[in-house]
Image 1 (cartoon, rainbow, N blue to C red):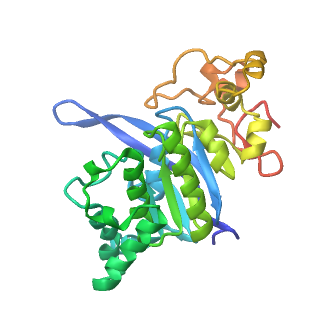
Image 2 (cartoon, one colour):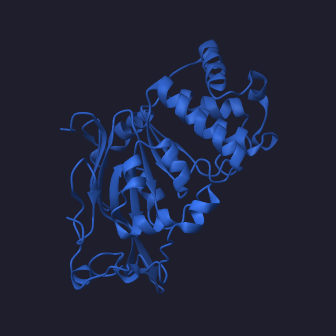
Amino acid sequence: MVSDGHLVEVSSLKMYFPVLAGLFRRKVANVKAIDNVSFYIKNGETLGLVGESGCGKTTTGRCILQLYKPTAGTVLFEGTDLTKLPPNTLRHARRNMQLIFQDPYASLDPRQTAGDIVGEPLLIHNLAHGKAYRERIDEIFAMVDLEKRMEERYPHEFSGGQRQRIGIARALAAEPKFIVCDEPVSALDVSIQAQVIRLLERLKEELHLTYLFIAHDLSVVRYISDRVAVMYLGKIMEITGSDELYKNPLHPYTQALLSAVPIPNPTVDRQRKRILLSGDVPSPMNPPKGCHFNPRCRLTRDICKEQEPELKDIGGEHFVACHLIS
């Protein structure tokens, strides 16, 4: 059974991509994109998922939606394990789970009008036809602040911000409960980012949505998220409330990430101490033994090189995977 108030529960999730080589394309290694990840998302909240590029954020979102079939682990949505559903049942379940893509330029079919793009989920899930179909499209366009006359335009006739609004409208068409926002503002100008973030917040309140908000911009994540999970090389390093994470980061990796976030006050920004990480992110094909972060951590001890830390609750739903935190 799903825990009370939890819409999504991810347990021991793994996603390994095989590396093939040679004439007969034999598997020679695995890319461990996600390696034993567990977390939950409460009903009606926004969980931010942050980390460096290539850490597994997008793969995590797609595994939850079953766009990738996980190598191991479970994904509970309203108490149902999505990893065990047959294709037809999963197709119906996907009505409640949608994805907003990162790139508004590549995620829209250039051969379809905006109205057809937004209306496609209505036809796939048999939700509306005829007059009701057109009325529903009009209603969704109004929700995302697009005019009805824009329904007949093609994607190349819109700006980047407008295209992302079309992507958001498409995600809303099937009336989902849960939306994975995969870096939905990273490809947009800063002024447009603010508009889209405010739109997502308004829609969350009006439609009682739950978000997994994937991003690498920590300032954006702090603004929109109720809780934040910090990911590094396929592992969750820290999860806690947004305010708690920014005021009291405990994991050395989280501290390093936050030290790089610009502060609008130049005087304060000059006085604070930067934490510079040495070396590069290790290969996910051959992650370090013990804690994945130990080769770059300024506080590494012998135990960090030998034993993988457990993600444990240190109190107040503040979870940290570090041997030095108790």
